Image 1 (cartoon, rainbow, N blue to C red):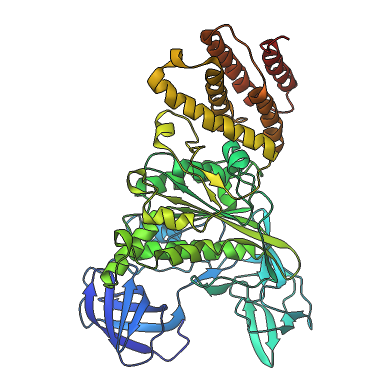
Image 2: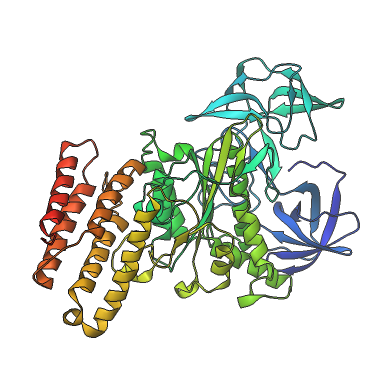
Length: 580
């Protein structure tokens, strides 16, 4: 952070974990950055409360050895991230420190106070100007572009531009670093230099667009239970609550790989170190279905494990959403996956406790709902100044203790998201993946299948569940043939449509076209009248039908056997129709 005002200092008056009280005699701003000098290191911190001549700051690193009287330097700037070419394929911590670059210098055990620029300063980028001298621009307007991976990375007028400006200078095509001057803007007589890199405060949304729109277009994830039953819209929000081990992280990884999004931002917030390491190892090996290259080429990972200081856990979520908004400003569809917001909320609770604030339910801060709402509200679809559309979709996992969806974090999240994908321990234990409970989950967004087909399938699932519960008491013999057929149809729908084999190259990713076709056939089966001599025959029929349907799910659309299997399925159903 560069100092924009006269040097201002204070001295530590008290220490409570990562919460440090500082006495000062000059002006201090809420949320500004400070550096704590302890020994030979400078630890980064943020002002979180100002009261009289004292300020409470949260230190983002280990405070071992810190003592009363240590000097604190206030920077006069808000906690911000660097935005520009070179973000994609990077792994950062919550403060946007590039972890691989730090590891190259210091090894696997990172020392306190070690800082490196988020964007490397030496690589050059081939700049192509798109603005002309004399052109009027506003914040967020495109001045030029550089190639970054599979995208054209827009170099935009600074988001902090105070008003309309005139392009006074634009660089000629060529190779430049992120700190080289590529343009100058004249704003009411003030010359504003522009580089490829700009900084932006993480807790302030980027609003350099013409209009915010209502999400309408579906974000196709190629997961049948999501796209058909509980869809997500581009620019929408959703949450995935579930008990530990139910498959939240795996579900997010599958979504990041197959969803119809240009850029994926993953915020591993407070996850166990083993899970984060697994993500870091697997993502470079994953093949992007869109490009055939590594999925990391269009991914940014922000990771703060549970073993890192709790204060940095809160910052990681805001760092991730700010980077996501930056790529949205280029007219791209961005997907942000936050795992897990529960541990983010736990960090808020810990900081609130140290501030001695009045606690809310389960000792979470009383303002928990508003903080969660402000995070999810940064999602949306926007019309940019050049009439292009960009979207930011936010999906967060919640890890309620014991799988209790009534706890405060889950309930606060449900009030603001547009879709709820509740994971079930029972389905996970039964190896029914994805383990999303079709009876508890819901979505406010429009499905890709006709509404009448969807309602019929949902009715069958509910009735089938009721019959299953009844059979636990009266067993199969005490159930009528009509109810038993409803149960078998519900089980068939679950087995061949709600469940998906993530390791199968065809079944693991079901396109929108395929889902409409398959769901239409399944709907016909659910509506079909059937006659069987006994329940054993009926069960055997549905077992054979399910096996044939699973083979169908594993057959590519353009394979000649796809249509043949479909005809066999429809023929089997016709054969058991009751005769007049």
